[in-house]
Image 1 (cartoon, helix red, strand yellow):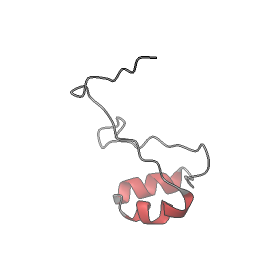
Image 2: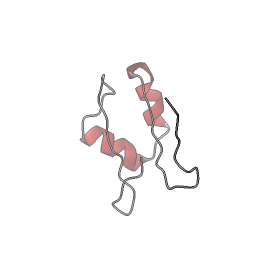
Image 3: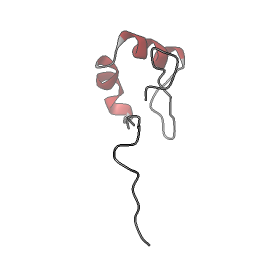
Image 4: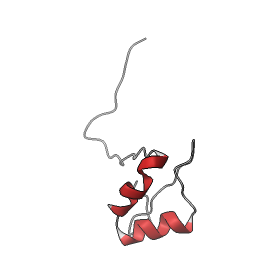
Length: 62
């Protein structure tokens, strides 16, 4: 199987993989807006759980 990768110059978004045990410290490093979003959506870093984080312009930041 040949490996292929996207063009490194192509637009991308970060992907944060956070373990349950690391959630509190990771959240503490996020902006107030991101922390509020995660709390409002009930994010607990459970197995298979994910959240899209909104950008200030309403798009997707992460």
